[in-house]
Length: 330
Ligand code: SF4
Image (cartoon, rainbow, N blue to C red; front, side):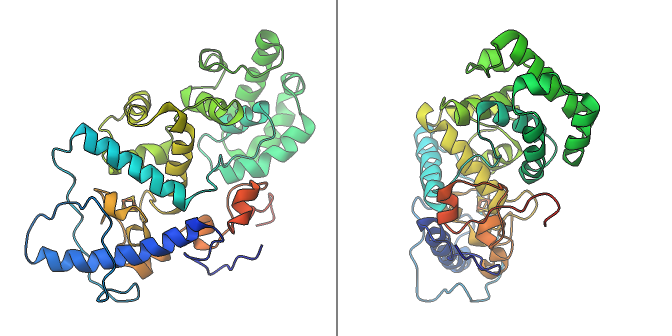
């Protein structure tokens, strides 16, 4: 699969790329429409449907930045549920290959990788774990490991002493309390050293097929921008967002939101002008609204660059995504 490094949107092999390309066009059109409307009325309401393309606005046009869109006022619970589910459906079309971005082959590897991912990127974890799992493939192996040797392997992940303690500690707990198997219940997982609800839901959702919402930093930021909840604590966010969706959608919802946060809706410079859900977003305008400038902010496969996994799923490769390089290779 050949992916051009300078590709931004509309170059993916799947419908997701087309979706973003259409969104760029829509965002451009909407910006022009909003500018015209602003001269007539001070507080435009958020449209329920994406703006229809008009001849007057083209993605390449230079358009003056618009003011941030006003948040939906007095949005009813029903309207919120509809908008939230629509955002998730749109994101599912943009990221049909959404997946956990940690490389793993079994529940033990996913558990360890998720613990290691604290305070670092999934890419760095993925570049580190091949050596770890080659030397310590089972909980028994890691439980009996020399901590100094594990520390050396985990050094690139940062906080390597604390992380060494956690992964050896949880391996010992798996051996002593669960027969060397990763338990498939939330209440058991959260008792393991270094394992909180977020880690537990990642493991349950992706290694056991049990629905879970992963409230990481991207998820927290995006659901606040979308005004799905005003809660600030992860547990409360998890409950509030969970109530908007059927349980069966929780795991993929988490992937969609996190993918969007990593690729388009960044913390500091969200690429609003290239965002496929801009018409549904109360925070449109927090970031770059010019479509051409926004396209330059896109990351990973949307910006033509490698993803985070060294061994991504085939759907991702089929869609034009590229594997990340191993440690030291780039
Ligand atoms: S990129 Fe902009 S428009 Fe898109 S979800 Fe983020 S804040 Fe909203």
